[in-house]
Image: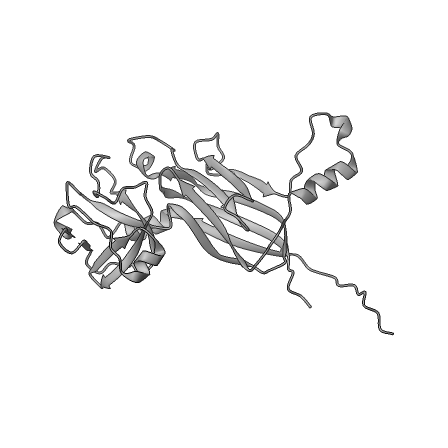
Amino acid sequence: MSKVNKVRYLDKKVAKLTIDFSAQRAIDSAYTFDAANISEAADTITIVGHPYKLGDQVAAVLTAGTGVTATVPNATAATVYYVIYVDQNTIALATSLALAKAGTKTALTAGGCVDSYLQRDCFGLMTSDLVIPLGSVVTKVWYDVITTCKSWDEAWGAGTEDAATMSFGINSAVDVKAASAISSGTLFDAGEHATLIGTPILGLEAAHDTALELIELENAKMIKTTADVSFNYTIAVDPISIGKIDVYVEYLPGSLA
């Protein structure tokens, strides 16, 4: 009779994700538009030679020095929009990815729009290209802040500074780290690095922190993937226009035969 029990020796994998808001801003801020570029009749924005494609997730941001009074009416900084590609010089905006794919535009008013641009992947829920296979066990996630993160208004020295919050997730939007304001201490400042999961939280009484309790606490912080999932991050309150973070994900793959 053949044995059904078997032993497999697994190697942990470590994947690195770089989230670079500053690099994205350097690209997108070159494509500014004013009120004259907004067609209220067609609900489109003319941006010559724009880099956007269908479904790009964007937020309206102000060019440095413009001031917070210059806005895109009905396309505010604290709202996620999805690009509808019209042609190489023209786009429209939708309020969901499904509506963007359907070509359903959101209404735009030219108003007093001055020197605005649309920055990609700086607000809302973003799914990254870091995919963790079904059944994998994520044992640790840690991060290293390369450049201090700043919300769009603090970057220009006006408005509510550091208002943005950020969370990280795998199976959900917050199972790695719940939303924290980028103003919380030095959490998202250059040079900061910390473990997001995999570090046991000690009890209030050191006498109760036995070796077994520490093992239980550490295991409780691990995450088993319920599908092939992308590491995600969510930004709320304000877009983050500046900053760079390296995130490292350590996991045991679950797809090995």
